[in-house]
Length: 215
Ligand code: DC
Image 1 (cartoon, helix red, strand yellow):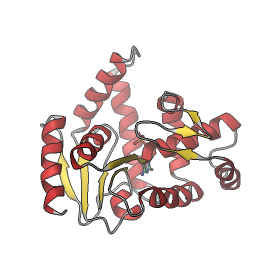
Image 2 (tube, protein in one colour; image 1 turned 180 degrees about the horizontal axis):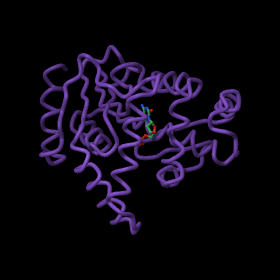
Image 3 (cartoon, protein in one colour; image 1 turned 45 degrees about the horizontal axis):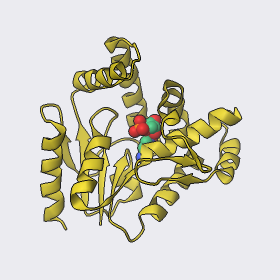
Image 4 (cartoon, helix red, strand yellow; image 1 turned 45 degrees about the vertical axis):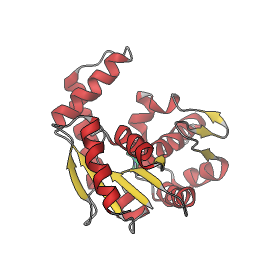
């Protein structure tokens, strides 16, 4: 069984997906981490991230492994490196690439084939696992998402203004929702979950209940 969780950055998808997978005894796949790993590989080889032929060649040369809680790029642990602001900023171009999306969609389906998975991203319920039995679209008020992100970055010792986060988030949301390929929209049969007033536990309680109804 596949459970999908899509939605914008900062709505709490990763935490919710990880905890939900734990409670259901499922595996968990963070597909954003895959786009980030390809982005890191592209930045390192200094190709243009909009050059489709160069991206195709890059994809042929990389191997991604996604063991629980880790991302391995050609066996190197890049779990921390893919969260840098440079990778975050450049990931939009890579995520808009038809060549990259085509390949990652295939890898995602291969990873989850015949297994129980909670898959998190932007297109999991609409494209990658359109037949999934249980789909969520998790969102939250933009101010609240920016505040959460600000707390996270401040705790990591980074100093950044809340206003700057809000602005960058607005641009990313607009770009993700408006892109031609795999835009970030809820699947028609997705359950909409607004995490603004809820704790992570409350979000996951609700999701677990809905998922168990469909198991
Ligand atoms: O969720 P995230 O911030 O780690 O995602 C990184 C980038 O990949 C971001 O630009 C959105 C994009 N993405 C996507 O287009 N499709 C997915 N299934 C997951 C992420």
